[in-house]
Image (cartoon, rainbow, N blue to C red; front, top):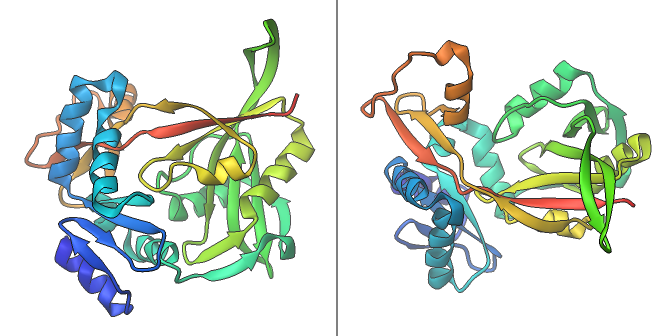
Length: 280
């Protein structure tokens, strides 16, 4: 994986330095650490033993920070690299400054049909599409360039100055944009459209630690309120496709199916950060 990733960077004349599986880029505020299936499987064993403390993300973060002096790090899992094709490569290049800029103020917002949003997310979001109630798209010159989806509301108990209140809380389920574009202000524009239409008391969302600690949410006025423990996945060693362990347990079509180690690697992701923004 190291040689293949190095060749990819060199083919686009990207300058880098390497320390083991850690790639550092002069004048860039990002580093990339490669996570092979075997290493990811090792993280799973750590999580099983210490799930409450989520040591996997802490251990990898500490190792990365000690090597590069801190900064944002992308954890590129081998299955993502091998199954992501052109999309993952464009996404990596975008994080390294090779992208087209589109300003959200020059785009129009439209509500999307379910299949239109699902098709976009299946192609461009790391975890594909997911159930939702509201779907918004950002169009630039009649081309769909970004999608955001939100759940239905549900009552949640919150405390304000010792007083209990019931808030209508919604989840920001997905956000994705074209992998070779940076939509400047895109998340904010789609969020504003949802808030204007629905009027939520509260919105919560998660930032995937594989890609980001969630700085974009902070810029939008969200507050980090916790973390979601790492999740485990079976990865097909031939196709490199992920199947969540939770789905295997819940979905009847997997009942009785065996995932032998020679065909599947049981890996762990790095968990996620939970963010909330209130409008009351």
